[in-house]
Image 1 (cartoon, rainbow, N blue to C red):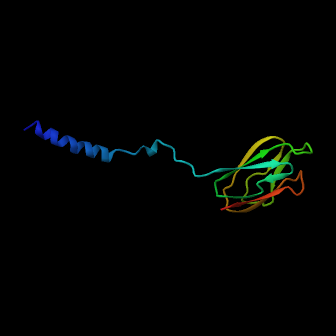
Image 2: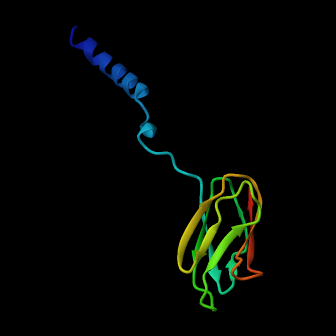
Image 3: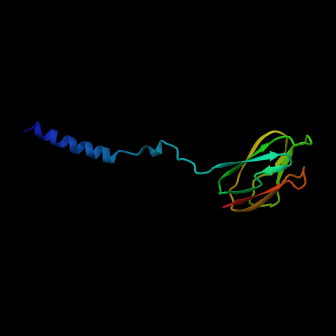
Length: 121
């Protein structure tokens, strides 16, 4: 009789241990739903020049030398809710995270008329 009871209890104990087992989600970092959107300087234009993103998303500006040999800058016309302006850059990438909802306009003051808009939802 002593042998039967442990054998009967073993499946029950196994079920309890499995049911009470912890999730490994505490050791696995959560997946980010934020995304990165690329903006390129093509000649004297931003491409794309009209963007829609969500709060927490990143705009990554990819700079290339303009046909006139100059670099580009990114200056946001709004004073609040936008990330820091980007100084004149000839080549490379600079990323900015948008944490505030709204519509934000940006210009390259090195090249008049070179502008873009980002709508942060």
